[in-house]
Image 1 (cartoon, rainbow, N blue to C red):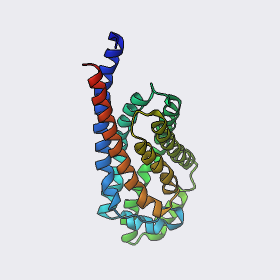
Image 2: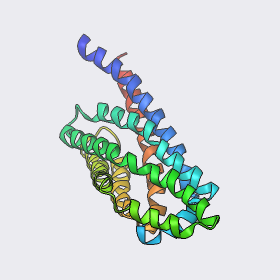
Image 3: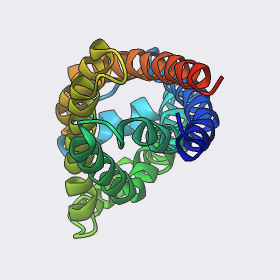
Length: 228
């Protein structure tokens, strides 16, 4: 191995290990939502959504799931570092671009579920049901939801594309790519308010994040051996 390649490998190792730790943190922060309340989230059930959101388990689980996007972003960039030089770099690039684009677009809407709906549940419990429900119905008619809606769909496609990149790259185990792709596939109906999918998607995502963490750590170990 020449000097330049050795230096590149040494620089890759800490990024991979940092990414592995970021995925572990994302998994731990996503885990509580598995056990939280999962009320119907479609606009036709705003009352049930608000009352379900006004619980400790919902506030904890759904808020941590949103905040988990921070370590997840770092993890995805570390994953891209591992995949970008392999045979599936085009898939990896497409996956990262779609996932980051979708995530940034969907972020404004995440506050609605984590902050607005619990507050609406409090007000409904205090007897302000009709006024609150009229407000919620109006919120869903605002055009600002269009980018959020598109972002959620694009982000799921990005997750699937990254899973395909892992499968084709031979850098991480193929089962890791299959898990991540499954998270993206199930994530689409979950984002589109299918309650059953919302219960399953966090479980698959936690498994995928832990598998990614293990795969990146092992890849960093292999890279470390090459520099000795």
